[in-house]
Amino acid sequence: MDRNLELKQQIAKNIKNLMKSNGLTQVQLSEKSGISKSTISDYMRCKTLINAGNVEKIAMVFNVDKSAIDPTFKKNTSNVSEVIAAHIDDDATEEEIEEILAYIEAKRMMRKNRKK
Image 1: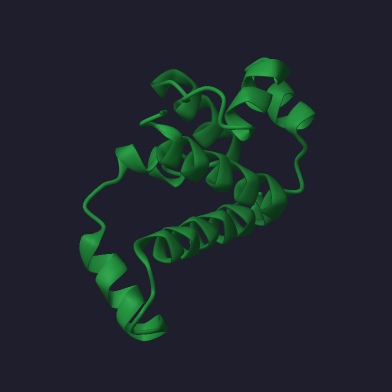
Image 2: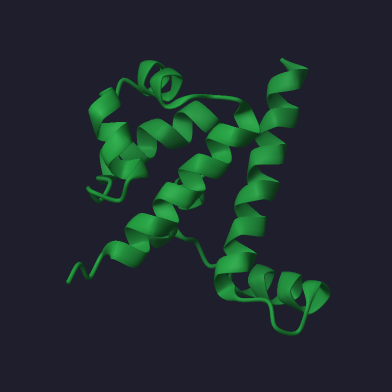
C-alpha cells in the first residue's frame, strides 16, 4: 500500500490544473522547468512523489507558491479555508477548498503575466 498515494494524487491534480489554466503541455512544462519529461509524467501518473527542488522549479514556472503544487508546503491558510468554506457551502471539503485556492492562485498568475 502506498501511504503517499493521496498526496501524489493531490500534487498531480494541482499540476494538471495549473497546466490547464496556463495552456501548457507536459513537454512544455518539462522544457520550462528543466525537469525531464519522464519525471513530469511520473508525477502526473502518481508513480513518484515530487521532491522539494522540483516543487520549487514548477512553482517558478507557474509563478505560484510551492503550496499550490504540494500542500505539505502549505502556509497557515486555515483561516482562509474556513472563510472560503463558509461562503461556498456548508459541506465543502478541504480538497475542494484547496482546488479553489489553487485556481485563484493560477488566475492571479495569469493576470500578472498579462501585465508583463
